[in-house]
Length: 333
Image 1 (tube, rainbow, N blue to C red):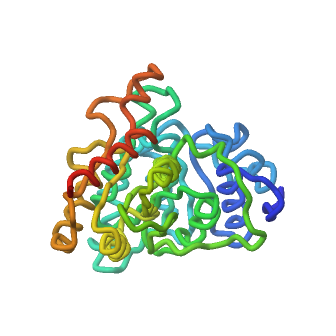
Image 2: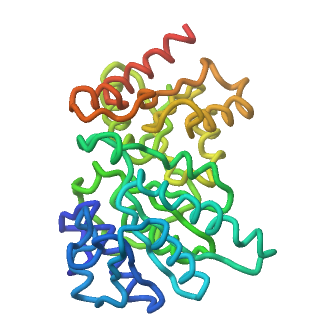
């Protein structure tokens, strides 16, 4: 298995695997643990081949108990290791919420700064794959509410490849949310692709009329909507948040300062979601720069349906993103 070169096609899945392989090679303290990560190669084939290369001491299959193996990861981190814990899907992370929130996120504070928890937890998030309500929700905004955690949402091949090593170097717990629809997306990576900045958002498309602020699985949809709107003479700036905690508020405000309008696209639910936090920060700090109210486009307030036509209707789509931008433009006359 080799790191992809600029002339080789790779997938989001392969980019994550390459990042884990490199981390395992670079630091003997790094190991991977989770359900079916070993001989099965991971539920989404992300860890395929790693067991044969690194052995069962470093690629560890765990019992089906998220609370138990996340707790074991916390203990290993406290003991000086650098564990990568894989939770199969974000819905199941709630079974480990006590470990994540009451232990991993709080031990540094509760120990008076004596106990860091250098733990990385990876999990799949998001809908669009007809896996129904127990496997399809976007709960990263919930975890972004918790002090003591860093929340990463890689949407590109470069970020899928480059976010893991900086996360492992962080002395505090980092959660990485991988959108399930991205695993098969493909493209090219430069030969020197490596660690990326996990503190700052990125402008994925420059524009002057409206800022579309998004992340993860809705980035590609937002970029497609921007291309459609460009044919109508509307130049959309697309901001990829990349990190939900801490939010890069300056990047958001700088973009809104240029365009004077904002649409927040979030696959999470609208009520109490990360979109509300972003909207509030814009309103608090850039109210007089706005030419229209901040708009939010989120998933329908319902469990994710199984039926494809209902699932599609529940989620932000290219057409609904474009419609939300048009509505914001109409709002200021």
